[in-house]
Length: 234
Image (cartoon, rainbow, N blue to C red; front, side, top):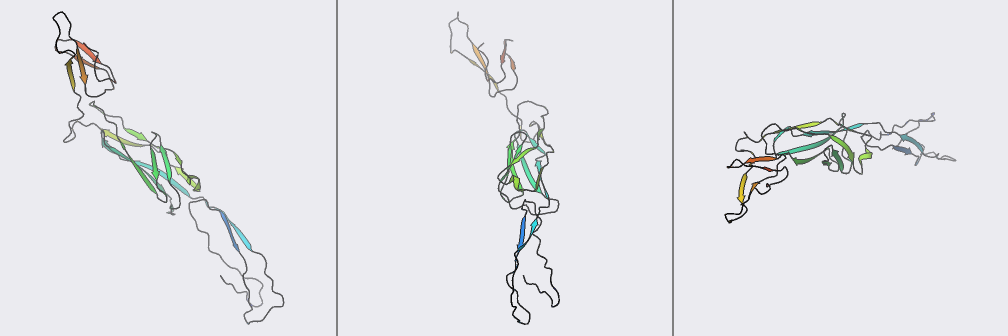
């Protein structure tokens, strides 16, 4: 840059460009010095001396970046729930100078926002069960943020508002009859002598959350315990 001190005056003001507003911590200093000085008419000074550099400290203006979580609003049992983290600044300042950011959700899931990006997503599988009836909604929220540059923001705010995904039951969905629970019985012996009691075992094709009580054709009752797939021999 070049400035002119008018004849008869002893100073001139120069306005430097501002460092620029952003969302990152980057306080610093702007320094300027004198490189050369020449008389407008070419007159040579007897003893021209230059003073030292002048500097101005630049402080951060605190600009907030908000991390917000959104989720798929509704899925069928066993469907895919997509969680998305979005970074925004109310003034529209760029958010494009950071490394990977990791956002941990309350259920333990981690959503990664790639370097220099404002959004990141992850897809998880919704709960699925074999029972008819309403399912509990899947609720989540942002718990914490981490990453090498998580500290770099002037003010990174985590919007911890909970998001909820409705999980609908499978029966009634076109083309889907729901999860099959198949109960079978097998004989434990191929043959026995007439004085030996034969035994039978009842099986199911999937582990259940509750005990299953099965009544046999002779009205005997056997129980398959929760978490198991067969009964004790009857």
